[in-house]
Amino acid sequence: MWKFIKYSLLAILVAATVLVTNAIWFKPFSIRVFYDRTMLEQAMESPQTLTYLGLFDQFGIRGHNAELDDTSIAKADEGYAELKETYATFQSYGREGREGQDLISYDIFDYFLSQQIEGEKWRYHSYSVNQMTGPHVNLPSFMTDMHRVEDHEGAEHYVARLQAFKPYFDGVLAKVDASTERGIIPPRFVVDAVIEQLQGFISPAVADNVLVTSLRDKLAKTEMSAAQQQELVTQAETAVRQQVYPAYRDMLGYFVALAPKATDDAGVWMLPNGDDYYAYQLKQFTTEDISADQVYQTGLDEVARIHAEMRVIFDGLGYDSETPIGTLLQQLNADPRFLYEDSAAGREQILADYTAILGDIDKLIDPAFRKRPQAELEVVRVPEYAERNSAGAYYQAPSLDGSRPGRFYANLYDITATPKYGMKTLAVHEGVPGHHYQIALQQEMSGLPIFRSFVPFSVHTEGWALYTEQLMADLGFYQNDPYGNIGRLQAELFRAIRLVVDTGMHAKRWTRDEAIDYMAANGGMAMSDVVAEIERYIVWPGQAVSYKMGMMKFVELREKAKRELGDKFDIRDFHDVILESGSMPLPILERLIDEYIQQKAATAA
Image 1 (cartoon, helix red, strand yellow):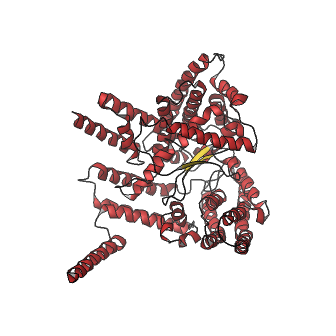
Image 2: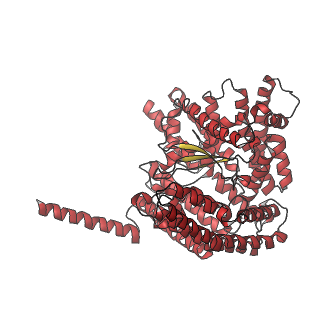
């Protein structure tokens, strides 16, 4: 008996060795293994991604936490070459004979890889350093929010990463220089904003820099002795002085020299082959072939429709029917009833109220959802060093090991930009059942290739979050709350305006000021938000279009399912199909819903 077991175990080991060897060094036997190998290979190329995911830390594998990503142009060249090899291997498996989720996976992977490969042509068109993104913003945020320090090793890794700032910055700066040589220079306001950010970051004494104070705060929560903690803080100070500040100063010098070459033009039409680049960006972010003119006209139509709906509510509340909607919204923004005290206490109250609103939402959603993510959600403030140029709010996914919950970040820089009547809708969008439901559930999916849990499609993710705003209205979240409903419509109006101003600047040659004026006049937002949003669209062309275009597709598909299934339609089924399949391009999503409709109709017949 023992001999049989011994030889059986040996056979299993040999078979496993063959499978592992095949998966690592050759074309895998199974496309599913190929998907997972590709996902693992991409993750292993990025130490920061591994930290973000928390995939290996739970098993005691932590060496990656001492490294930063390789940002060199040579590494990017290598990445594109490997991507093409991966795509060729993928195509060799073939599409024929696949069905159901297997076919969905194939088509998503095909679309995602082909778009990345096409993006090589435009690799230098993006502004690698701007007021929204770049190492000067992203790395401090990564270190303070993502890098865990729970023991001495974690602290040593933190210091090691500080020592790697200089080569990281150098790699990014080389790409910026390559863009500059090609005539791709950010608008002057972007350059000026970056200069201000860089100067601001290195203005404190080293001991007071957030990278040092954050480590000090993290160490205080460990069991290390005071002497050990001080030694590590001293090492961090040395790294900031010798590596971090010089990296910032080099980048500052580059942008100061770049400033005279920049112009005030806002749109990417000014770049070499700018119109073609914008067309690529629209396709990238909507996953559909749609022209700038179509997006622009859709935006104008939606702005008019939403204004008309808001007019009915304002009339019912007794407001002057001759006053423009944008002006009425600005009046609401200034109404003391809807404003918090401009103080630390007022900001703390905002966070507490968001948490309470999420609790209210939780009581209403059962009629529309069966699935809920296991990951928790918390509301936190956007880091103060980053909030001036950050979006009004954003969501951060939880870690895979459960050590970090999902986070709804609220920007409290300008307290007047958080009127009470709009808070319900923002909590829905960034939290429940918006981003937290869709993204956390996507990470928790089982039975599908790993890449399906992480592949990003803005039009799906942002479209879903905006769709849930309307869904919560359907569920009675704004019943007897006309001002809350105005807040919901204002949020949708904001996304419709984006269609107009994004295409206006990048395709129709609007100036930055023209876009600001249009959004301020029609959206009624706080001016600080208007300026930050318009400047965001300038450096991220096409992304802002994805929200409204995605929402409209979700609504269209839901109405199609209701129409074709009649009394057999259950909105929980509809949402299950979406949330159990993860993010995907809109044409594939539509096919998935069509299959659901057919299967539901057949089983109910």
